[in-house]
Length: 221
Image (cartoon, rainbow, N blue to C red; front, top):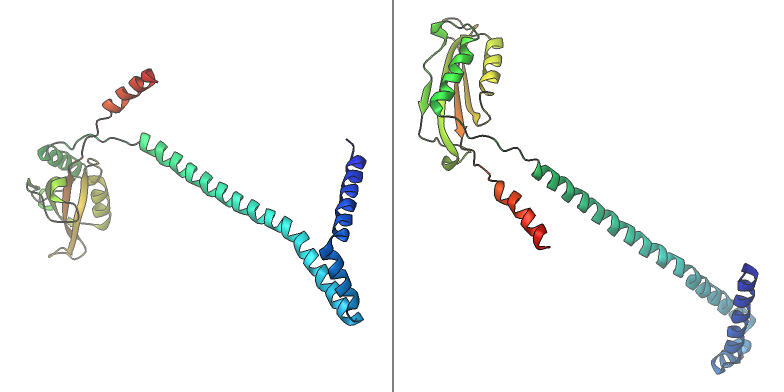
C-alpha cells in the first residue's frame, strides 16, 4: 500500500466519521441552537470550539512526550544503579586481605631498626614501651592487639616529619593514635615528641568456602 493510498483511506474514513457526526441527533440539536444564537455569540462559540479541538490535538503528542521522558528517567536511574552495583561488586571481589599483625615485640624491633637509619644518638631515642593491654580510643579494645609508645628527643623539623612518616609504614596494622610535640628544654630550636601507636587486630577473611561453592552450584544447574 502506497502513501497515496493511505491518504485516500484516511480521508475517506474522516469523511465518513464527519458524515455520521452530522447525521446524529445531538449534532442537529446543537447546530439548531447555534444557528439561533446572535452573530457575536456564534463567534465566541466557534472560537471556544476551535480552542478545544486544538487542545485535544496537541494533548496527544504532549502526553506521549511526557511518558517518554518518564521512561527515559527510569531507564537512566536503573542504568546508574546497575553501574554502581557492578562497581561495588568489582571492588568487593578485589578486596585486599591483609596478613595479621606480627607480635608487638617484632614491631618494636622493626621500629628500632628504622630509627637506627637516621643515625640518632643515644640521648635522642627513649625507651620504646610495649603495652599488651588495649587502650581507650576511637578503636574498640576488641579490635586492638596492643600499643607502642615511642619517645624521641631533640629532633629538627625534617627529622620529625620523616621519622613519623616512616614508622607508620612498619605494617598496615600499625596506626598512629596520638602525637605529642614539645620544644626541647635545653634548646628550643629542637623538638621532643612522643608517638603512641595502636596495633589493630585484623580479622582474617576465609575465601575458600566461597570458591568451592561455585563449582557445586554450576554442577547442580
